[in-house]
Image 1 (tube, helix red, strand yellow):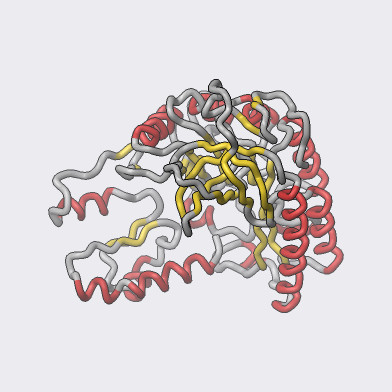
Image 2 (tube, rainbow, N blue to C red):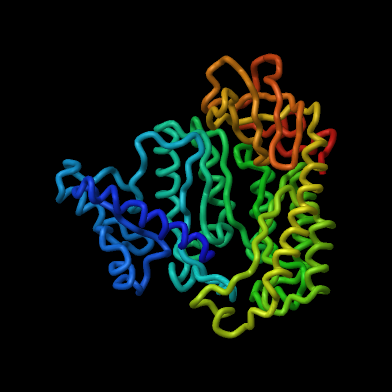
Length: 407
């Protein structure tokens, strides 16, 4: 979505020139949103790249690999996705591609086209295969995940997909991102609250807290509607963590408009806020029709104001976990400490001599900062806990409110 991402990709491609000189048989391919009608420009800029593939176009790469004799045959493919032999503990599954929303600042609809959902059976099969190969958590991805299924026969929704994935043996957790407030229905909310393996965490971008700015962004909801939705989510799923995205300095955002955004963040108290300064993206409606009228220094001031506010809020939220027991799915080891995430997507570090990779471990929280927690493994308790069962503030949780809340 952001130009900065393309700039990083371009820099990385430049760094591969020396590799191509040393090993001319190396295949370098660029795929995804960066490849569009500008293919000739990309070919001129990166002559060492063998293939330029638009989103979801894998066939030419598989054909070239086979032609070069790198493999005897193309690797197994589900829905045109080549799956890794050894996926990470947490594996990503794109469930739809493209977007129909047409937010004025976003390039995705122009690069990836209209939204297309992948079939339910295909997604369940891919998730099961990833679990067989070692994944313990699947993260469902889409520009807007909660519109999945609207274009499929029978019009299933995200709640149906979550319910179909939940029984997969060996799967501990299910996450999804990113959501849009408009299609986040009560049925989806109730599915998150009901299904044992679906984590209590929702990423729900608000982008701005001022109605006029939201209108100029073409976000199709008001600030009041957004806060009402958050209230319904928290009422249905006690202890849920909610993260959001915010753009500061968008066209027409004066000081009063920014203050309304700041007040919304203060009121809602998100667990995490991803904040970015607005910069016009060539090809978007905002780049074409709306002035970039907030000075860069003012954008930076607003960015820092949001960051400072959120650092305080995140610290206060996380410190309420001190002394609590949380379930951590261990993803790796760094600096002699295991790390993983709680069901509410909080990063936790702990030391333990036992091999913990891929295991759900009960951790007593002993330290809490704005961005992570630290703790020690809890004493082993009696057997009977379900690997995929919800755990919030210690007690087993299957749809009933815990005795305390850290929100």
